[in-house]
Length: 454
Image (tube, rainbow, N blue to C red; front, side, top):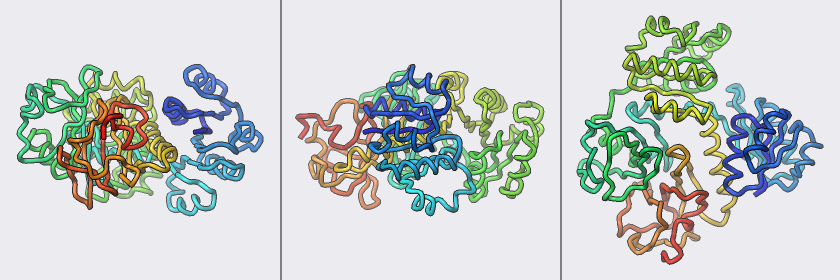
């Protein structure tokens, strides 16, 4: 597919990287020559210097033949204008990043009037992910499938955990029904079978419905009490959306922000929250605001370094649920080594959503991709498909189908019923099928079947 990306910031660069790696023909438009040079030096993409709202620049990028145009500049208004111009000039599909909460009420009208096919709000999506982590305080990540019916959670194993040293097939699963989907060990990824032995320091990914995941974590001793008090450092857009989400459920939120004008805005827009004007990196301030009594600490400033430092201080103050926003991918390993497990990256959230959309466009005749998450540091994917008449393995027992290696068929959802599949189970037309795979660029359920598979 031919894809034009307008805006070569953090999100634009991340999108260009993933989409070009999946075999798409990508062109980036930006006014910043340094940003374009970085993209040209590191990615297999074309670059054009200029304003993405300019008809001349769009024509130079041959927008008329674009399958998708993605506008991710730092201006919502410019992104909307880019979409309008691109559609008028012949682009088939347009995606716009719109972040300002003031536009939230008008999004449906904006989509129709400006010809925008998909609107993405990285901060709102990141806030939704954080709210999921608050729901499961003891896990590192939570991804949702089947309209929220199925959860994929990850957590670290310690030597005192009772499943350490056991083969997965020897773990007593009479009390709950979950599936071990992936294991990260020493920067390697494993799609485990029943004989896989779990070890100390493994990061495991487990899938099941919400009640069974809860029972499993309780039995493992990893389930913590419901989060009631949350401290947030940084009062930006993610904080705003998060506060709106969690205060509905009775969670008390305390926000520390050093910009006085922003504090005033937050005080007016989130009256339920406690707003404190101050520097969240100051240890004395955090201690005076009872950090050690908090159920969760969330670092959301614009500086990764500040987020890491304050998160470390929260961990040392024995706050068990610490969530950190990171924008630079090269910081992820550092963060893990110092003990911060729950990391949120708005640009990765955005990339996952758009990659899912692009893959679905590529595979119009096949299965619809309902959800897609890159997991285990982008080295594996969890993908949800909706099976249809093009699916070759319909109504055949799974034990009679040969799947490619590096693939785990994790869950089937049928008529709101969640099935952890066994050999005699089948895939039926209309089922939601969730799989975890190391194979790159999976477009369809048929892509995981070996040539001699049926």
